[in-house]
Length: 484
Image: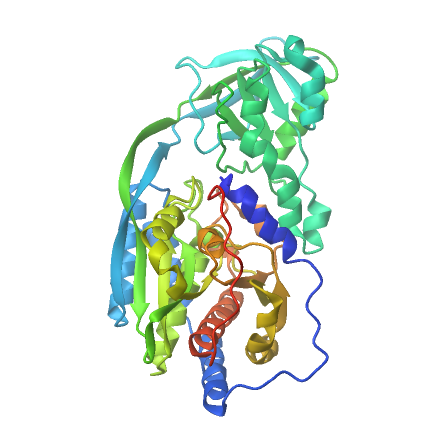
């Protein structure tokens, strides 16, 4: 991940900063633009286009891990659907990793108080990018720690040759108050680099307590990163319940576990970003991006992460075409490939378009599910807020009128933001998102049709407003450094 996911957490934390308060009446747009934005909002709230697209991506095509046949098929499907709308749609080549999960089993084979001749199953799933155990599996003692300080305090003598469990608890109370992003940020670092931290001390495998809520014995997968100064050891996520049990037993005495993981890292394969333009009438060279990422994990069908983002981005263009409107600037729909295992689609797009960054007027991405949106966050100078307040005033009627400044953008548009492009996204209800994110339960039924319509309204109204602003936005300062 950011690790790709980790850096995105800067954004997730920042969007919960105090909202920009505006005690003055918002400035107004020209009457025609204001009327068109209201027309778009009304049409979005009455449309089932995004829902039908999401249903097809999830129920018909299914899981879309990068490098899989489903991911490539989904890219072609989205491109074809956008061509049907009359957009100039194309597939831009991206080389992506091809990691496949394989078999994954775990069992406690020795622990205090066990009935002779028995074992206890451990519910787990390999972390994305993990190496395999030996073909016959491995059996080793387990040590449980709550954080990196506890791990380092054990030292090599107590860690070498063992399986390390990081029992870092996802703060469900924090998430329940609407702060799902910060709750995720506190725990995800153990998934990202826990294996390398344990390997430096001689561990033979690493387990991480699932990073998410809803403890229904669901393991949460996700990408992990091997650091260059540490051996590569197998890594898996265990359910919260299993993590609690293992930690409990290790306090009583020796615990041994048998672990079998058979993932494979196959050669990188060719895949695609979907890029489709609805040409602007006055400044076609200036681009406003609407986007979500098309790839998903393999456990579920990627409805909230991030089929919903792709579907509402598609609908932003569909609404403009349906209503016969003509944006001054080009609205560009992008379905990004491989956000989950390194953001190679985002990196490839930024590299291919680096000489055209000045013509990227703005970029929007939705990648926090499909919960009720309460407004818009912006990674750009606060001086831009007055230009956006008329749009937020229109969205207020569907409960999405908040405007906030964020420090960073979502993963796929992050490279553009660091190149100086103003970046935006919906502020969404994240109370339940991390219950299902990266699990087998990320399926279509977790999306409320009305909330998906509300998200489509935010994406479309914001995109059309940006595409028709009378003057340019003040751009954030370009930043250098690693992409993620």
